[in-house]
Image (cartoon, rainbow, N blue to C red):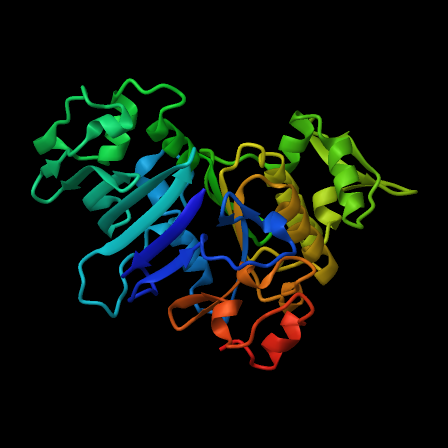
Amino acid sequence: MIKSFKVKNYKGFKEEISLDFSDYKDYKYNTHVIRDGLIKTAVIYGRNASGKSNFGLALFDLTIHLVDKEQFQPQHVNYLNADSDLDRAFFEYVMVIDGREIKYAYQKTDSKTLLYEELYMDSKKVFSYNFQRQKGDFADMGLVDAVTLDIPNKEMHISVVRFIANNANLGKQAILRKFMDFVSNMLWYRSLGFNQFIGYTKGGELLMESIIKNGKLDDFQQYLKSMGISFDLQIATDPMGSRFIAAKFKQKLLPFLEIASSGTLVLTLHYFWSQRFRDVSFLFVDEFDAFYHADLAERILTHVASKSHFQSIFTTHNTSLMSNQLLRPDCYFIMSEGKLNALPDCTERELREGHNLEKMFRNGEFI
């Protein structure tokens, strides 16, 4: 799990912005949102153009140079902050895997060009490498089971972490292998009706074809029903012999994609990805309820928060989700003026289970 994340001089973040998942309060309710001493589910609020989406892109920047997974064009454009004189962006991740703390930090001039990289295990330095000078300090490679690996110090053109993972004889239980598996299974997707995503896999599947191919039509129909949407679905064939999902009415069959509302289409996207949640290590859903009714958004958030084993972040403008009945104050964050603060850090008042968080927010309590 991710313990903390920092980024600086990236897109709209001229100054450092951070999120510390270990900074939670001693609330006695909704304890399921804390796992192994870390916040498991977070919701980020912020005005339009406050940086919510860019923060998600920043979190997933390491997938660009560490693994061969799906990328998203906005990850690569306008990379450095336009108001800064600095020539690089700074990233730092602290993760906890199998009880061990891993700190991974790097600097980039653009999405694909590393200038500096370092790795620590339990506060002990594994290595640091300066790509400009082509010089590294390989302090203790034994910490990642790579003591015998020959590092081409002056010829390194890819991430050192990636080089070690690809060339050292690492077992499945090796800590660096588990770190790379975590990165490989991170998933970002945007809930705007079409399948834009980062990480997890390479190349996209068509949503309806995936449901048909995997024999999930009945499961999909029951899923929609559980969310308050009832259709009589079946598989039909068009004149060209291609199969599609159709909704059955008294007089005719109609293609599901042609009659589904915007919210139902986004729910279909969520269903598609939820079938892969068993393998996901970290989830970021941007604009997660852009087309949902408030009740449906609440169901989705509650389901992911209570059932998932992974950490998740959702961005939204829906203040009705800001409730102690769903999560708790330390799970709600407000992004403003390049800062990200949890609700308890935005007020001098002691927040309690009986407080109406949404009403307090609308009344300007959290500043």
